[in-house]
Image (cartoon, rainbow, N blue to C red; front, side, top):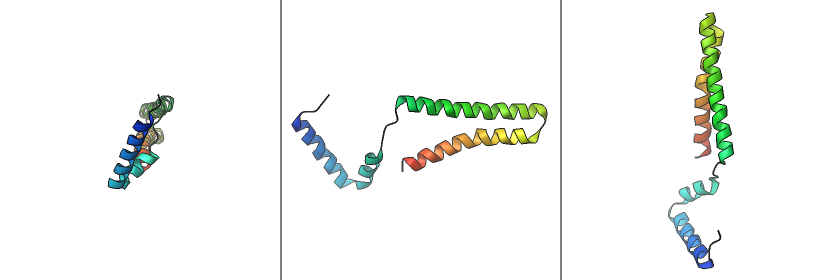
Amino acid sequence: MTLRDHEQRQLDEIERILADENPRLAHRFEKFRPMHVVTFAAATLSVLSLLLAGLTTMVVGFGMGSLPPILAGAAITLGVPLVSAWYYRCRWR
């Protein structure tokens, strides 16, 4: 749905005023791009799959009584959320 000319002018004026009052916020909105639903779903499934793989590796390692699979599973299980949080924290700054 397109806006009428006077509505678009009003929005442009509001945007200009907000950018003058808070340039940092304006800069954040300039680089903000909403994530598509498909992309979000794929990312969520990927993270959950890696978490499940890490937990499975840890359980197998405990069952075998072997330290390397336990450590690998722990690294995957802890590393995935930490890397994801770091990535999105850096992206939205």
